[in-house]
Length: 113
Image (cartoon, rainbow, N blue to C red):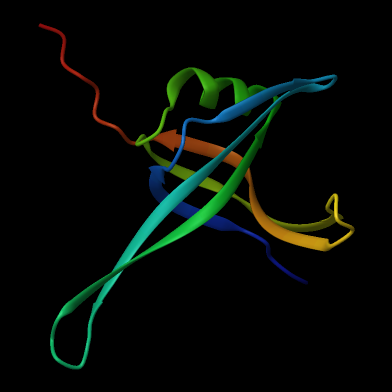
């Protein structure tokens, strides 16, 4: 195997998915928060949150739009992709995103009474 580009994350959506329709289907963008914790030298618990930019295309974007919202807990599997562009002021900007290839809803279903 020459290389591997695979990311697996479990976290909560930081925003409602932003969905746009394009010529070749929909695109959904959202942030996903993942948490980690450790003990510092004094034994205090320190919690950290990392934010990941997630992008989903076509059918996956439609499912994400229909079934998720801010706070939803999901498992996302995909690959890392970096890109750059020039902003309105001519400054070069960079971002790294996770291109979602699959996901699983992890929220517990609400019971019907």
